[in-house]
Image 1: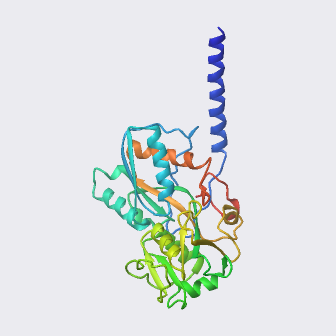
Image 2 (image 1 turned 135 degrees about the vertical axis):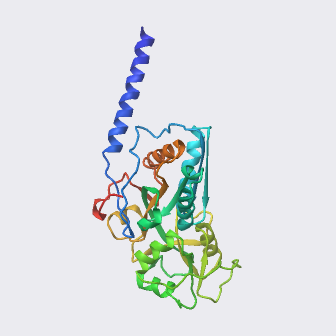
Image 3 (image 1 turned 135 degrees about the horizontal axis):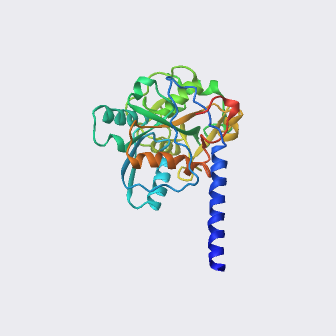
Length: 324
């Protein structure tokens, strides 16, 4: 009898915890919609479940696109596969536009793999670019300006100074390290920080860094990691990127405040920091069971303990406008 009562009590406690988790999560209201929205999309974010645990669907899934969101997606994919050995989830980069194009083309062609693909996109593209796809807003990605340590006298730069450096022809003595045209990081930087056309991005990558200054004023990199690597090893380089944690692997790169506002969730919420966008995932209108379960699992996984440069859509940001 005592054992039965103990078992019943344990199950009751578990039910209460699950109910509390459901009430806590569903009582939170959205986050913001990036101001770079160019089309009207209905939010199809799956409703949060009572816990972080996935349903554990077997099969394979591919996420492709944004290098800014890639580390977050990779961590979540690893967690899902750890709990669900029958699932295989790969995460590969390119850039936001590349990932969206790959998934959209797979859907348009009727590819058998279309339902098992998810595009990672920084921001929200125009509606015609997402034909046949459903959007799943995940949360706010907070981008940072990064410079080689010692390049700037203070760990702060003004918007006007950034324009002088990043708008061609640039500023002698400093290298503006940007991303290519398909990058969501670049699109958010141009729209929310520069607020004007900086000129076409350079073709090809920056040269291999030598540890010494270069004399040119602009170059581009294909990924977040490549950009950070170049800034880290080039004394007169400054760029921009999404950072999911400390710059441990890039000891000579420093995060720079913009107009005296540092890239923190607090400053995004109070409106003083402008360099951010809402990360959207895009999937076929009829995704596979694994894709659907992962899209439901991801917000639940991110909400309790988000990365320092990410604000989940379950977090309330009333001062910045509508829900994401």
